[in-house]
Amino acid sequence: MKNNSMDILKKFGTRIQFLRKKQRISQEELAHICGLHRTYIGMIERGEKNITLKNIEKLANALKLNISDLIKDLNG
Image 1: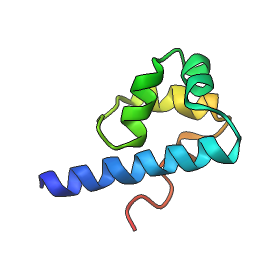
Image 2 (image 1 turned 90 degrees about the vertical axis):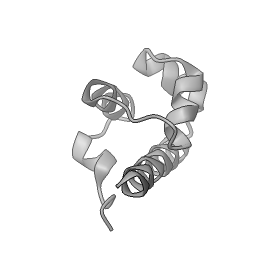
Image 3 (image 1 turned 45 degrees about the horizontal axis):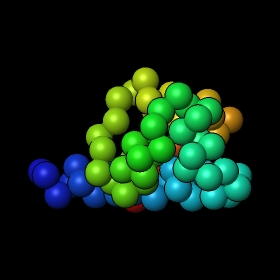
Image 4 (image 1 turned 120 degrees about the vertical axis):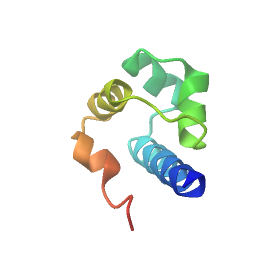
């Protein structure tokens, strides 16, 4: 069970990093827009943090996406 949860965290982090870079936003800029710390964004992108729905919503808003766009294709 733990491996599956770690896999989803890594996939989510990779997705956030991809979307951030696609918009040419630095971790620091994203953190500022979200009201989160830059190191926290890095931890999310590395799959080290299991974040709350509130923070997922903050990331989605900062990236101007729906929450569903952030979690798209994480199962596959």
